[in-house]
Amino acid sequence: MKRFDGKSIALIIRSLLKKQVKVEKLIPKLVVFSVKPDDEGSSFIATKQKATLELGGHFELITYKKTPRFEDFARNIYRITHDDKTTGVVIQKPLPAGLDTSTIYGYVPDIKEIEGHKIKTTYCPPIALAVLTPLKYYFMQNGKLKGPDLIFDMDRDLRELKKIIKKRKIVVIGRGDTGGKPIGEVFTKNKINFIGVNSQTPNPERFYQEADIIISAVGKKVLMPQTLKKGIILISIGLHRESDQWKGDYLENEIKDIASFYTPTPGGVGPLDIAYLMYNLVQATRSQK
Image (cartoon, rainbow, N blue to C red; front, side):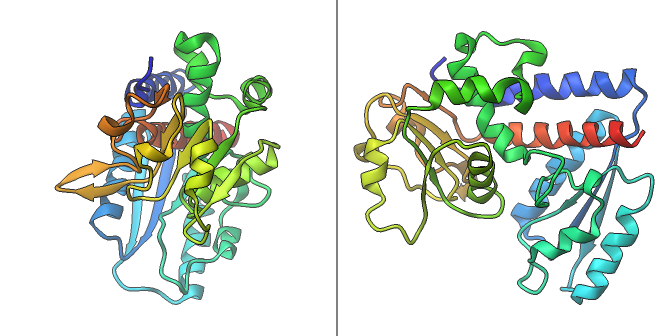
């Protein structure tokens, strides 16, 4: 149970959602807005498309090859997202500087903003659920969860998990829009104590050495074995390409004998992030039925 198999759990969650869509005769439709996507962004979009179609839903991609005027971008978002057939919306990050503002989400109906960016959002950000799932898997029922119990439910599971990890030192590395920031916001909102570390933090290793749980969302190798204490729990969100392979924020072969539990890259948090995006999409579609 030391190495977390996020891919297998994500497939189980998506299979459950597919059955739900079929039984309830739901018609999910995900619309993704993307501005000047690079190869990495296009790869992430393709993953969302594949997951939506496998779910039995519809997918639409709105791509801008050049940066549009904010007014035109906002107007188009408003028009397309207010279509009754659209049940979920993703505005793919990163965005060009002139468009990268939280006000853009004001043009998306609350019920359809399934990434959880809005202040009074209906949904927990998928990446936060993807982080809470391995913690639940490790601490609750000792990795013996099956079926629907694998899904992290904020109402059902959060209180118990909070009690278990209350006295553990948690470090969240990074504050990006797609990783550290939403995780930190969910933790703060739900009174989960943690230390936030970023590129401006002096001597961050002193926090790593004392941590019981580290959640790293940087996108490059930042965790070295000599800075970690024995028995650490490691969750890597950050991704980067190296020799045509996806790598995380630590090397598995360096930490596997130090950590008591860790997520690999690939196959750890990433597949769960997509699974929970689909989870939010299905809940949104149900609410609009």
